[in-house]
Amino acid sequence: MAAWASKSYNTKGRKYKEQEHAYRSCYQRDRDRIIHSAAFRRLEYKTQVFVNHEGDYFRTRLTHTIEVAQIARTIAYALRLNTDLAEAVALAHDLGHTPFGHSGEEALNELMARNGGFNHNVHGLRVVDILEERYPEFPGLNLSWEVREGIVKHSSAFDKAGKIKEFLPGISPSLETQIVDIADEIAYDNHDLDDGLTSGLIKESDLEKLKIWDNICNNISKKYATIGIEQKKYLVVRSLINMQVTDLIGETEKKLAKFKIKSCGDVKKINEKIPAFSESMIELRKPLRDFLINKLYCHYRVTRMSFKAKRFVKDLFNLYVENPKLLPDQIQKKISAVGKKQAVCDYIAGMTDRYALDEYKKLFDPYEKV
Image (cartoon, one colour):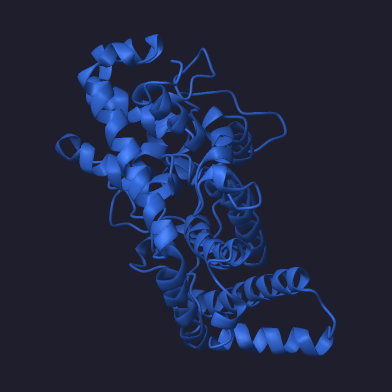
């Protein structure tokens, strides 16, 4: 590993002391604890762009998370970073997400405004520190400080880093965490594009005006004259990811040299993200990102589902707060310790899309069995 990689033997450790494993590093153990957690499994039925019941061919939070981890490992390996730490942070980066994606998060943030609001990164830390119940010796998963920092400080175009004193807000996180941030952007830009085409909300003819898409399409069409639309779409998305990852690795190496990075400590002193695209790649990506915002994320069908999702979350939250006896016994028991609103917030944030919809039908549809 490079001098600027996060070494497991330099970890700040865990909240609760444990004996180290004979042949697995702390970050490998963290990765495995995340994979075996209930919160990780629930990502299978949480929204990425399309709600779970709209089809099993669209990406979910789980498939998105696996794709982010794959891209993050590739970049981390090329830059000689700690691939185990990068993978662990990537696998954990969405554990705090609500049902219905960012719509659910926005609704909970409004509902919890007088109680500190809701940030899915901060809630992700709460999940791994408190809400997961797997070990008799300690609450949560007892992850290492560096993975927990990566969860809190995850940031992208759609994600805001949490501000928690323990993790020194304003100080840059590890390079491995920064890699996950940009791997997240690469994954959702390109795979949301794939899902948009599959759904029919985006048409290939709409994309022909984009230089980054048109160039790759032309090259593929020349090489494979009789290729079908599904194979073509796959090859284009694959090529887009490869192009961006390759550019990112080259530009990041230049920035490491520019800032004369020699250690992890040097990384934290730089008040900007070191992993970055070249100016030419930024210019190529911008029209594609603008296109996705205007044509997919703001498509009337997605907007309508977002509106419905917020209503589901708000109605369930208000009903549970007004009538806590409607909550399962184990949630009611937590009210005395954390307060009614926090207990309800934790419960709803942990729901899958499917479970939230079932609860809504049971509680608001007079003909649905409870």
